[in-house]
Length: 162
Image (cartoon, rainbow, N blue to C red; front, side, top):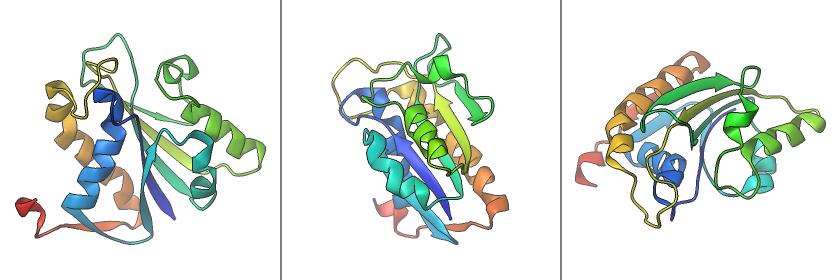
């Protein structure tokens, strides 16, 4: 099974990007195939049960960098820059969750899409304009990632009304 996991804290503006992304996918698309859309929020180790049921994982998260807000980075588990992934507001970092999975013998294929935020410190439930602008590109990247896994999708006909 394939899972798309959105990580983030919804009340810290851009930090909630991954959760907003999952919400967008749920509203905009009807998926066909063996896929789960998971709001990973700040669950940390609470995601372990979900991850143990997945063979392929796509993670979407805002990750603080020195790059321009809205910059998108793609990594897999083998080339994940651990120092970059430690710069978030989560209590337990997702990299720690993946490490725990590996220690328990589960090593799914993982692809990370990390987006450089503009504001992860302010309180608010909306993402910044630079992140809103790159959302269509992020959608396309994720959809291209799941296509070879046998996942198909349709635009939800009710989406325009949401």
